[in-house]
Length: 263
Length: 330
Image (cartoon, rainbow over all chains, first blue to last red; front, top):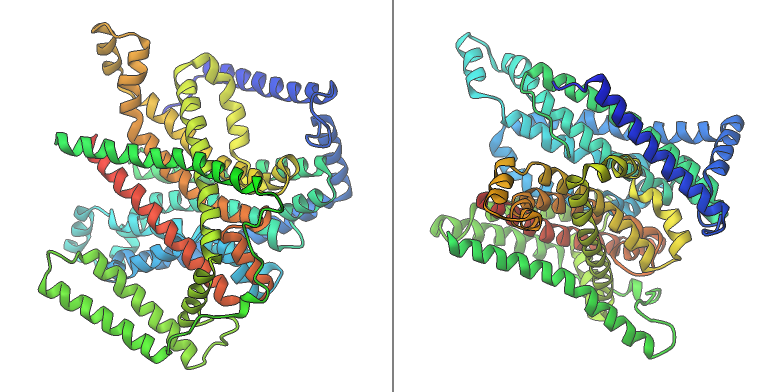
């Protein structure tokens, strides 16, 4: 694993910091001088003020909790269904060959397109959003699990078989551990799509959450609030992504393959 | 080999040409439409029309027909294994079986048809919409929007990726800002897009552009950075200047990676398209679905989903085939 030396890292940090401050300074300046209307683009100072105000009132926390709850409900459901299903489909190749066209067919419907249908089936509220988020993160996890299971090295399988392992041993000690890195990549991609779907479903079909906060603020033309919402979504997404990347890297390094896929 | 390369380049040019020409044509068409005056009637709210249905097939005949079709397909496959590809047989069989089960569940009335209309009703509805021209309007609106946005993403994303990858000075400062904007999911921009651009095509094009832009930029950066140094140096040694390096070494060697970026970007753009259409516009397949939802017109919802899915499959297949071809070429 290549590590950044202290000097290079601090240089990079310094430059990023400079770029961000320039960007934010330019932003504030252009509104201060009246080049841009503050109604269309709120200045950073106002956004920070608004954010602190919301934090104090607890409004932001409520929406974050609602969004995260909804997201993790969908995400966990997706993981719980996709990994076992992926294992089954990866193990039984004939079944996979026959079912994969159908799965592809469903995979290619963008999750937001299923939202109206989900609303009719499940009603307004939590369930359609959770359903659509689960669907969005389901397919990347499933596909990567199948891929991971398929890529198990034959020699490892043969070794366990020669040593007298049965099918359960194979799955527990060979197939599952060797598929984990790929599965983790799938989980990370699934997180990306699920996060995107979370926001879009909250904009359309929820009565709480960060997406709802955005949409509500738009209706009231409260530009700072929209920015507060976007910033919060951005920070949360970044945090979860970094966390998942850490886990992914841990598993990949443990496998010893030493390659990372970025998607 | 040479013919294959030429064919590949030609198809790519055709695809890119189509993508680039479409906006020009459609903008021209729109102008002509506006010149006629009056409100632009690109869509037609089908309140009375919504419940009119084309003639539905008999469910029993439908199921038998599909079963017979699948059997015939298998027979053909066993007689002429070279003509009928196995993948097609598998795909059509699994989809056919799924459709039969779907129809059967409703035929036996295990599920109420208000919530899940049978395939025959969906087909009848689609046919009705097609005859009225209602479906075509929405398909065209969606595709036009998608192509314009994707074209914009290509012509902005690839040059920016090139700049960032080649000029360290520039990239050190632009990278952090790009990363900051990248993590905001495109739908979160929707309220802003509407504030900035109003209701209609521009905000949705902005959202779709944003969805496609970042995968394209990131993959261009990666592709250009992966250029082998020895190729660059031999180009310089043989007397090429910097322009030659960019156009004759970096661009071709980055091309497969860029194309992967295009495919990923297209997938995200496709999701963003539907999201944007649910909120910000008044035509398009996403709008059609959402409008049908307010009317509890489930056949139209499912019909719209089927259409979206079909176009997704078409584009996805084109991208995957071309990508495979390029990988072989590399």
